[in-house]
Length: 215
Image 1: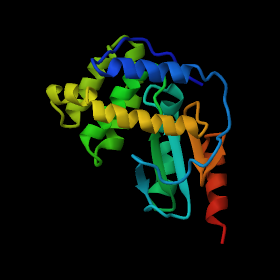
Image 2: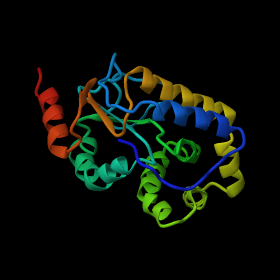
Image 3: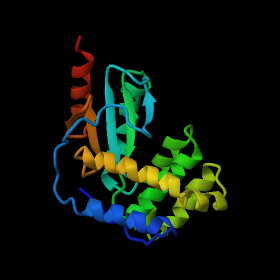
Image 4: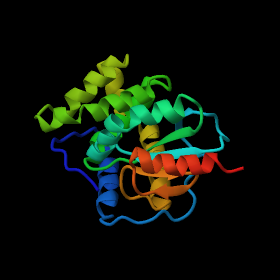
């Protein structure tokens, strides 16, 4: 499922590429299962919890402009993190998958990476939590600048970040890898490479605990 968040946001060299990403994602109107393995390590993965090679890896494909992702982040993540991530029972991997408006989502992901590995997840979570601002009429750019400066970036650094052609190209490659794996909606969760359709804590826990119980 995708969400419509109003507000225009354009960034020089990023605009055309973001528009292409948005068109590609919008063209995928129906949910499809994953084809091929997308549970292993991938270039650009951002992770928390257990180190690479852990017995159980949970991958989440999400977008900072997806209201369902934001709801999961608010309602499920705290207990999920306490139960599995903080205890190093799993390796939690977050993969960026921009949904419309893709230019806003892409900018958010770029800012998170520019903020640094130690602030990446804080920035992602803050942008998701700020979606209600956009629906209340706050320009998305104002929100993103606020989050960026809160993470230690100047407005000049913010503009350079969201216009960085190499970073945009790398994001495109990560999105393409997700599309090639069959991902076409957010949030999408994989537990050791197997898709879990129901993203409730109960369903994720059932899948995770079953993998942890294996010899």
